[in-house]
Length: 319
Image (cartoon, rainbow, N blue to C red):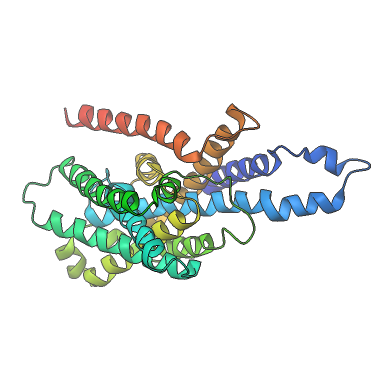
């Protein structure tokens, strides 16, 4: 627990900064003659929901990436590289096309089904690949993601849904308000479930034969892991859009520090994911204040650089 205190403190500091940033001046509202009613409305309607959404989305996305890496036994995959988020986007486009009046819970279920179906297709393709080097797995996922994304783009273009699709592809918390982020509570609950099943995911990551030999139902554990990944991806995409590279970089950084034991790494991955999301969102809000740069752009830029660094490090290690 003591090792988590610095990470918890860092997340708390970032959360306070996130709440304080905005066009409205909080010290002015809090000072003598300030408008207390407006202050409370601002905090409960906008600032606090946005901060909570960043924490839940960041933590859940990072943990989902960690679980997927354990399931496919490869460090260089994440939901955005396995077709999961692209499948969720395809599900959202189909909902907008055939059932536009479906409530938000129904949209999430369809998106989760799309993400789960794409992930299962990814695993089926991997099962037919005999030579599975460290880079073949992510490259396979990138190709599959590109195919699903191309099909989604074609459907959206032919049905005048491109604007909605672009919004789902770019992670953006600027529209998060009370009543529009509650799906992310599901992502938070799934993160807690992942922490509770950490030991089983660790054993399942050792391979099917080893897991069965240790008394773990490999098929059931993998199925539960995929459901968690699909549910998290769907809730995040439906609420704020795609957050790239977060589920790839954060688990790798924590693995360098504490290894592959999920019981130790899941809390740290969740905290670093939440802290990274908060820090990138704060950066995007301050660079051109009072305008905002979407968090997907900031994380995408930093995450791509971090991914290249991880690949270079792996090459030096193998060399």
